[in-house]
Amino acid sequence: MGMDLFANIATTSLGGPHREAIVAAVRDGDWRLVFPSGSSSPPPLLVGRTEQAARINSLAAELTRPPEAARSIHGVVLFGPRGVGKTALLNILANELPRMAPGLVQTIRLSGSNLSSAEDLAWEILRRTPEGTEKVKTTRRRIGIKMANLSVTTTTSPDRRGSAPGSAAPSVLFALDRFGSLEGGGRAPVLICVDEAHVSHPMALTRLLEAAQTLNGASCPVAVALAGTPDVLDVLRLTEATWFLDRAQDERLLPVGNLTDGQCALAVADPLATAGVAFERDRLREAAGWCRGSPYFTQALGSAAMAAAFEGSRRADFSADGPVRAAFLDVAQRRYSEAWTNIDRVGLTGCARQLGALWRWSRSGEGRLIHEEDVEAAVLSGLNHPPTHKSPTLSGEEAGVHFRHLGLLWSPSGNRAGPWELGLPSFFAYVESVYQSRANRRYHETLDALVADEASIVPPDPSPGRKTTVAPDSIQTGSDRT
Image 1 (cartoon, rainbow, N blue to C red):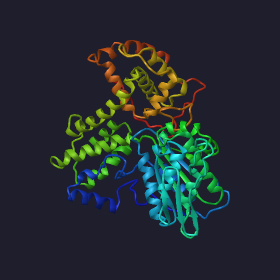
Image 2 (tube, rainbow, N blue to C red):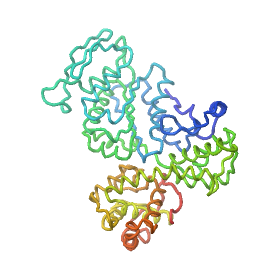
Image 3 (tube, one colour):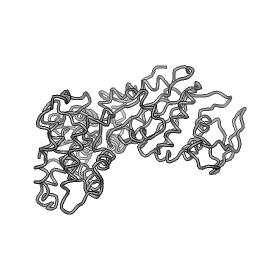
Image 4 (spheres, helix red, strand yellow):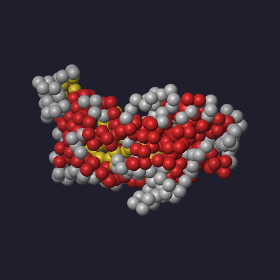
């Protein structure tokens, strides 16, 4: 069955229903809903996600087509920095597929925290058993299930590697099998959506993927959609289900990164105009550069513009000294402070400064990609020249993992060798401003050593053995030199 899960989602420009919704929100005084905060609601205009939409539609079509024997597992891994819209895309899949195929697909939504162990995952699935299955008795170690033509009591199918010896616990396979069963003995395709998948335990994720593979092999279609920071790839590599990526990595991995300045401007302009807010489009196009391609900051820019307009004269001033800029910088400052705190407490601000220098080098010439050895050199330089009052508490490898965990460093290809990108380039400009400021004496005192060390981390020119073409999903956002 072919379907477009994004048919009711604005992806290029606002259609009639979307415009009507914005007009109604403004009329009712709910103008804050035009650019909703957080990921619970999709933005009014989901731009720059054509490839992701096509892959998600393909997954939905595969899941809902007539089952065949010995199907391989369906799956997709949405990965990328924080705040790029992974959860919004996962929500579209989880919400729109059941709506467009009513009664055909059963959906279960989980968080990576539900995958803390195989046993906990099995219980979470059983607790979500849909209508048609009546739970008779549930305790921590025992469960009784009563279904039409089937009665299972005291289920003690041990997870062969996920439970302690002698314990009685439902297996993930049993739980998932029960979840997909329908009244009358039939089965429905099952979609499992796991947000924050990067905090999953590898063994629990192993059992989930194995169970899905087993059921697919028995002509019981199951799809697994994971969303998380790039850490989710490391978790997958630690599972016993390494075949999940090895067999079809290009099909399963779906990177979600930053936008172009033009896409950021479009995402803000259409909703503002529909809401009746006056603004200068040239000024907005310049202001879009403040976002550095970040969807999170794009939402913040739109929200700041709406607030300035509806608390004043229905006009958004995007000038450098205007109220929109001030409100936007307040949001950005909070985001930067959060990231700064996370790296400063472990003495990695010098590493961030050098990564920023490396990023500025990559943007100063066409085709300059950041490779694994470049990242390692930048991190090592920062560890060798920490702020005068801080000592790094992590090794070079641990520091790289820390930056990836925070979504500040990632590889859109999913390849450990890169090429690498900075998830929030403007944060590294913030780091540079802290080191440049004489008011931050203890950081400023180490700046000369870091600058002197740049020759060891910034290649003068692309060497003959290095690629010189820009990756298709690289974002050209200019330089952040201060």
